[in-house]
Image (cartoon, rainbow, N blue to C red; front, side, top):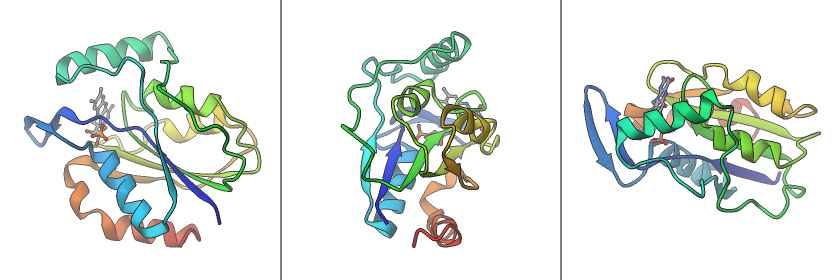
Length: 172
Ligand SMILES: Cc1cc2nc3c(=O)[nH]c(=O)nc-3n(C[C@H](O)[C@H](O)[C@H](O)COP(=O)(O)O)c2cc1C
């Protein structure tokens, strides 16, 4: 099985429990890396040409604006093709109860017909929000598996959940 892990993640300032702090690696990237270790899949980072601010409050404002405008932020790059992949693990943080708008940019750049998408969403309480429906709408023809919701703050101890989810979906 040829698997691609496409992920969006933001380092810098974020909320962890009741306190804000700066981190070098975002929660979703940590989860994506755990999935990579288990699957040996290729990784692609969905990065915005103009990333959101490092500062949490500014990032909230900017990403909310993009959500309200239904924006499709430009990406730094895209994979040349996803033809060689049958399964895409799509990892993203819950932003405003769905995916960051840059993930929509990524999904709309390709035809996912016949492919399986496994949604992995890190969040602070809203689970996958509306993201799975949004993926289905953006990728008609794809089989969208049951997603996994992971608590961002507890991401370091998420290994057994990721492993079980990958097993249940026949990826490992
Ligand atoms: C701009 C922004 C919007 C967010 N919106 C939500 C939300 O609607 N629901 C939720 O449960 N968590 C929300 N969160 C929390 C993130 O989903 C959570 O911290 C996630 O693990 C961040 O992943 P990252 O470190 O890979 O960027 C939001 C965080 C940010 C920065």
